[in-house]
Image 1 (spheres, helix red, strand yellow):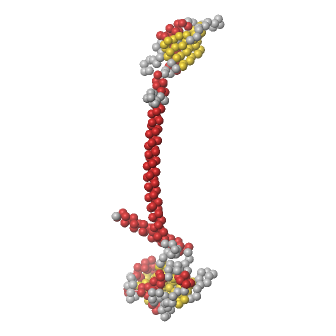
Image 2 (cartoon, one colour):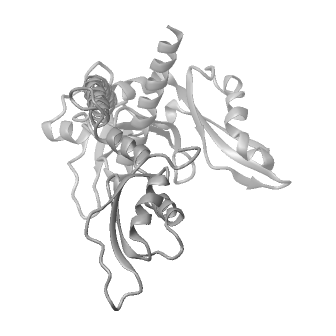
Image 3 (cartoon, rainbow, N blue to C red):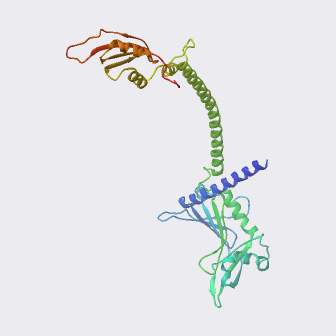
Length: 355
């Protein structure tokens, strides 16, 4: 529960922060219609539009904000102007209390706290029941500064705030007249998103978060399903590979085949190097070999010697050869120094210890 509460609080704060950022960006890009309300001595307000450069404004309108609705009712063009606009209100001096205050020059960065602490002594209201502001600091002698403090009751500005909320304004500012040309701002508060009522930014962000959560859940489900299917296919493929490897080692009837046959042949067939070494030991030094063929377990030797029949006996005495015989007639040409022989023998697997 604590984790859920923390996540909910984090998401709420994130939505609020993004909404404020969108409002700030929209406020810079979208210029709201500025409407000035000036309070007259009889308590009525004169509304006038502040026309953009090169544009023309609406005719001035006089309204009263005593009741729940302005009197008289707003014309259609004024309703459109107020909706999404910025209302800048100037109160009449009779409702404003002003004081000249001076502070040390180093107190310029702490005026809010210092002035707030004096509200209940300078006005008949507490700091929570009053709206107040002050002018920009003016330098005095002896490294001191002077500000003009202005304040009024929240009850006085409440009709203006309720009116601004009712007509759909995006922000409202309330100021008090001052001796200088610049009024003292008492309130400057946003009321809704500057992008307009057509776009509810918090609701849009919640919809985006919900859609992202649903998409993530669907992705996890699809991944779990496909992952299990792929895992099953991978296991089946590995099993088939193992069976294929076993089939390469064993035949269908269980006899050795494939790699097994190659391994068996390697173990039972003597190498050519060892056969050459054995034949060189069996034949005498006076014998010359001109051809040597090894086919399976048979060897054929062709060459020149002084006594061909003796070679049969010598090869039979060797443990590496058996059943030695002539596979072609022995000849003796006049221009040759000896007999040309053609001997064939079987090769045994014995080649000494370790074979």
